[in-house]
Image 1 (tube, rainbow, N blue to C red):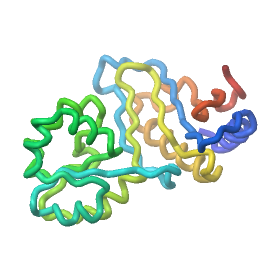
Image 2: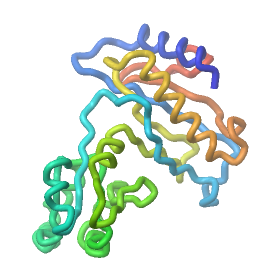
Image 3: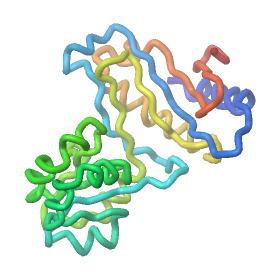
Length: 222
């Protein structure tokens, strides 16, 4: 991907996006071609650590046993001790509220079977279950501080049913350099997963939450 094309597209996006009373997200959209998404090997599922923050608070929750309870209480936004799992099992509204409270959840390996049993039904469809691929399932003696900080700059990019994917790379308040480098990180990570590399990317788009769609290299799109 030509970095200069991204820079020009971002310039056009800022110029053509109507001003709102809130700090709009800036989204990166990748549209694909020549992929058979019925083949699991061609589905996209990548955890991408961005070089810069996304301009909004990212919250991390934890499911822990006694070993990690103190760390999680100090470092994470929400901490759920295994002793409290029965309360959640008896109140599905609490489970749903918890799922919406954080962007990421980590889990102590020794309590994960019960996490799956109590929370999996609601967390799974939302993509909120602690994921080993993202390093979110940890040993009881783990130091979770670096993991939690890293997750605040990490996004999950998936395409399993549609030949496209969308993710936030920052906000209007983010600098152009941060947005471009975040976009490049995502594009690079996704391209590496595609069987034919860049040939599987139909086009790349930038847009704000309520603004126009700007195709990279092709100006404004409706």
